[in-house]
Amino acid sequence: MRLSLRFRPAPRGLNGRGARQGGLRRIALSNPKLARDAVLEDGGALQNWGVSMAIVYLGLGSNLGDRMSNLRRAVTALAGFSAIEACSRVYETAPLYLTDQPAFLNMAVRIRTDLAPTELLSTLKDLERDLGREAGLRWGPRLIDLDILLYDGVVLSEERLEIPHPRLAERRFALAPLADIGAAAAHPLARRTVAELLAALPAADDVRVVAEGL
Image (cartoon, rainbow, N blue to C red; front, top):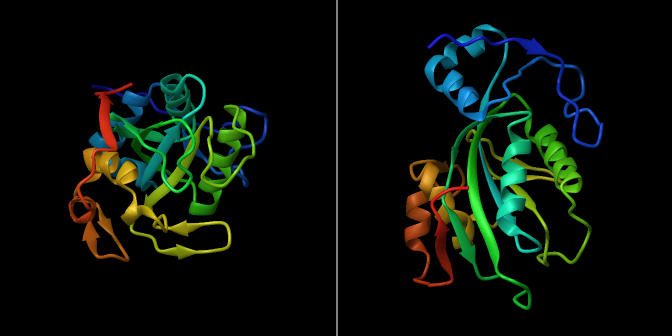
């Protein structure tokens, strides 16, 4: 299959803010499957064109409004600045920490991106606001939640961002979908795979598959 790829300036966010500072080039592909195939079939070419692509696992969640639609909209928006490689099944999960709230729908997405970790975080926070998320209680209800779970084996500890996600190893609602698309991915601090971390959790029935995909 012949792929026609071209560079363009960094796309602007849904709210008009630039998705990345500095005007770095990135591949512009409107079709997520085509983006995935381009990376998988000829990832070396991306390096030759001067684009450094990191493999990143994201966790998505929603427990307000039309939860499935919120996830779909988020994945569509992610395709605007990253190459989507894989999406997990969709799970309904009981809320954790603050339990007096509706159940969540959760999923995981594997992307390739040239955004650095802090740039990616800023872009995701902008995307959450653009999709309608409003400030609220920590661990409380939210229309959409976008978390960086793993970023290319990076370990990072800053005021705004920790990678891997600091509570990943205790969260079945994050590990179960993550195992669908990255069971062999390594947690660089725990030195265990995602599958091993999931197997180590106590048995529970508060996380169940509700859809094979979006």
